[in-house]
Image (cartoon, one colour):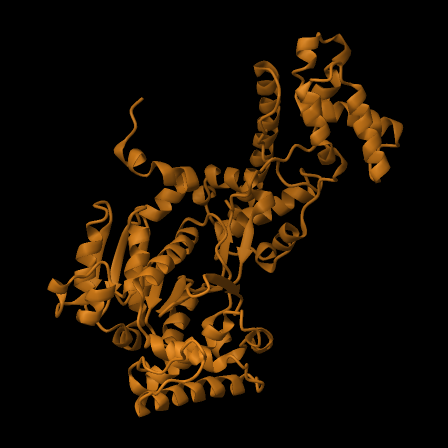
Length: 537
């Protein structure tokens, strides 16, 4: 069998996000603001799996500290453009990926030409401070372009995702099996009823699929209990006893599987609250020419549930492995797949009606997208992120921060410190000097007058921010954390940069491929304790 080189090259990741995910990666355009060590580690982990192209926007020149901490720079590049230097090294990782650089101060670009960033699939901002982050985030937010803000200071890593809405169809749950045992559709119900267990020899009896066993005995139970499912514990045990009595020999594995899965027959098949909320969402109700394919299909499925589905989602059509002979398993598989095709066809027809009603052609949404949506309808996800404007200005999470900041094991204190350091930077155009720190017995060593002054100034920034949030009870451990941030001096560490590269690139791939569920919305990593925390800020 001939396998093309690209399939061989990306074989492992194709198993994770399939050809559709790989295509999304290969057509993506990623922008990195500032070629820092952390930024380069992120790009490395995106270039290797094969994004379409990347652009590094950076106006700085390489200095000794860059060459010392950035794996993609060396001493020969000192004095040259950092954007150009890192781009040249990064391009060597994958010949299929195009690399570009723009030698310009990102701050100047954000001030004078913010629309430049609208050409990208996603923007990753490193070492960009509050004032300019707010302006960039507003531009990208309005254009619905995802922005990821990343910071790495000493042993602390931080990143934040922001985009108005992110929808996911292929969330990759552990399984997408929906056997409909409690509410069998006509074809599977007929097949189960027509299979005469008593007429089968021992070999065939030991290969009846457990699904059919459950259906057969559940039908018997319903006939004896006014059509009701087993509800109480005793009823469920009684139902299992009926299955147990159907065994001919003690070692019939298919009956053991049926007993293990008997709970599926006792659990009513219904739409979960999370999915129902999506189907009731105003975006699903009010379909317009601006509606995405996700919401158009979701509306079609909602209408399907009300009509053909009789209160149920389209059938996924997947059948798990089970004890059976080949003929029996293929027959079962065919029945479920045929029903799934019929449901998808009904949804397709409803999608067509919706598209025509809003003036779009029916080829706007392809069959493959509808089929995938129907298969994963029970697991779809909608995430609506908070904007940076909300987080920083109009609606900061004051009570959440206040509740967590008193706990010395919580990472939320680093969020406050990163915000305070940004304010320090805006005042001085540099980070605090690395100087004051505590030794083992927690007694303060002799510190320079300058470092003491800077510690106090950073603490004033922290206190000012907490006062803005009406947090007056300062945590006892605050000084320790401020000293640690002063000691870091705004510098990156190669190991933390590498780790953040892996974390952030993973979320970028989720956003680009629209597969798996990305975090909402902030992660802070403490490299001293090796603890990561997720917050909705």
